Length: 352
Length: 90
Image (cartoon, rainbow over all chains, first blue to last red):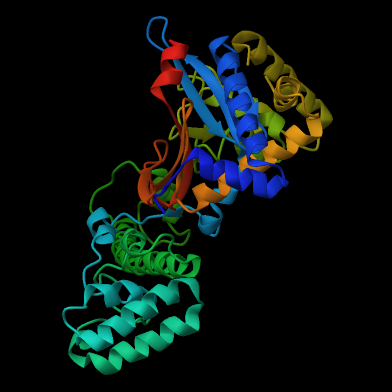
């Protein structure tokens, strides 16, 4: 690790692998590098199978910069220890500090390797050396060893572990931060995939906990708001303009004098949808109308907000018109054909 | 220049067969991969070094949604050209 491999070593390995003389391997390497250099100087890119591609890029002025992009297989092999991981979305209150702080209070037992190396001054020397040996081994071996080590620690340092939280799901949602992989990395070359996995699950769990509390709080507030709105509708103090939401909420049987005015043409609720990388016009059309061709009508409805239908900013709120407004009928081929015609018109206009 | 042409050129220069050169190339790629998996840099004099770089996990923000996500650690294989090569390319 972090060693520099020189040409002679490489030559030896190649000749061993191919069962050729060292002179041959060295000659091969020199010729290969010479050819690659020549080709690059001539301005052409070179690609080596299972290694990568050397490309030239024009930098400022006439200078050329050499770029190397590794071969896909090689990159995958190198990232094998991490292939189990995927990006995990974070909730808003899992702060960066929370993730960065490892400290001495790791709630997860697989952080023991780190804890062992951190607490060497607190344990007696004999035990700590055992633990650090164990910690080196536990990275390579599977879970059971780690759990054994956890038990050992518990017996030896009751004072230290008592202050820490137990690795249970019932811990407080805003509890001290879990250990990050960054800390694990410092003590060994590659963190165990399973350990990392546990840490990240812990992060997700914490995030889920805080999300739960937030959800409950929002639900409560929303409930109170709905209650007050209902009160207002049922016993209004003054007549005001009714919003569509209010008219939606108003029950049909109300023994109030304002019922006659309310019953006058309650407009149908306005359906909206928001553009994002995962929700675009054709998808919206499928969702609301049943066929993607009808995206053109969603576009028509919101023409004032968007120019080129291919370039709509994520987050734009689109009003979805009711099907009758444009004669949208997914079952009728004539309706579909008309939508397609419109899309061709738009295509000619915007050239997408 | 793709791999095939490169092998042909080197075989021609060396006076060896293409199959031999292919095997040598594979051995080289394998050796580099093995070293880099151990986080060792491979230095080729007059050419450059293959340096494996480990990126720790980090929080990135999705510009569209504004949501943050924790991205896992990854290993990147980089190449640092030697000054000799850089001068030749200037």
